[in-house]
Length: 217
Image (cartoon, rainbow, N blue to C red; front, side, top):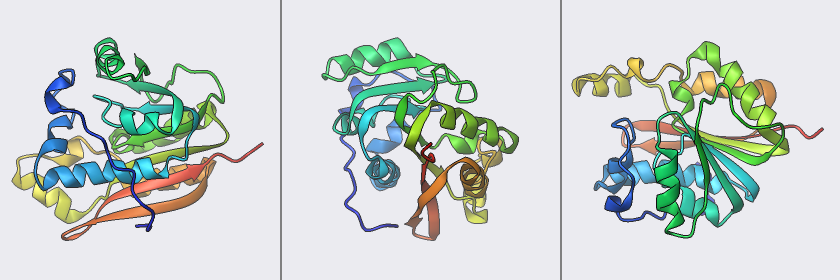
């Protein structure tokens, strides 16, 4: 992990958020101990976002990163398969944040070419199958400006993690289809690697944040 100061995640009270699908991890951000781990992975990614005019967050969920992103970007865009875009937009408007949100798929982004300074994906790319990773990277590259950055976070694939989930009755392979190695290998095909940051837990690496840059034309 690098030594830069983390951008602290600014959380609103839990009860103000729009009710989201069960897959959204919102509740975990507010829990003791585990909440710190959930917040830190987002903070690592946010600290890599360099700022600019427009950012696209893929899989924005409840929008927990929006207050931090507002300090760095003039306009926040978001796309999500499941989030209730109108309700989430209305909620954030009450706090002076006016994101441009819509439902949609990473594999077919509904935006034109070279629009965004940054594309941010936190715990999204592991849910994409390995054969779909090149499609996802192509779409990210298409909407990024030359010299723009893609910042992502994905969990480390480790035997201990898989085992611990099984003890909880969860087969993580039914949810995580790609590993951090799959993601970084495909990112390198289109982007220049700036750095990979490792977040460690009690028993070793648990999360990886990747920062890649689209080559300038």
